[in-house]
Length: 259
Image 1 (spheres, rainbow, N blue to C red):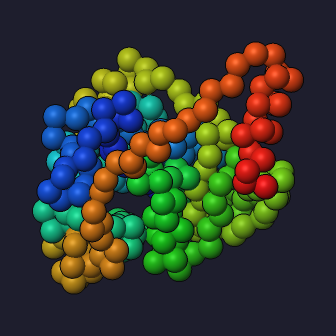
Image 2: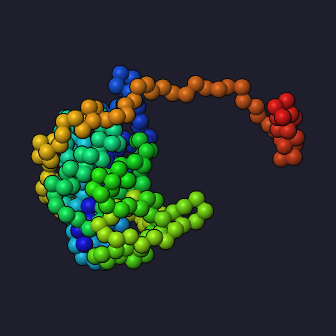
């Protein structure tokens, strides 16, 4: 089975800053990590490879330093890393990102399964996975918490819902976005780290994937951030003390004028 895992390098959630000029996340001087949800997608891909055989290719779009997450993925069991990097991609929203990844994947060949994390912790849109599937004209499942069965032609998965889960059978090729319940990511082995250090990362530019200049970066992004600002503190909070019953009585009295 040939599997592609889409990963993203994101700022560490403990060190997030905003650029007041560009209204985007400031990445210079900020420690970057692999998007946590993508780690679960990577682990599931490696487990499927170990069970069914095949190859796992990890792809990311970003600046040159994003190659670090590809090497981390290789140290955890992936076979190949592909970096899609070009200044022309700067400012891409989810629409332009899905377009760019689809063009890059088409350049790489055909695959059976595509895995993505449910969402990225820096944007929290959960749009790139489904958008990529639509671009590639393949079916997709979101919020997958377990793959029950899989072979070269189809798989059966549990899709997390608000009131439980659905069991869905889907034909391949297909794309899945996964949640953290699906597995427990492994720690890179020493052998894996040595392999990752020697690995050759394939880099693709906008010209390499024959991307339309009007469909990438800011020109290809129908959504743009106009302004970013911290919420104003509301103040005027009330603190209730005493026993639970006393606090409930105080809360009721406080709410009476609004009823």
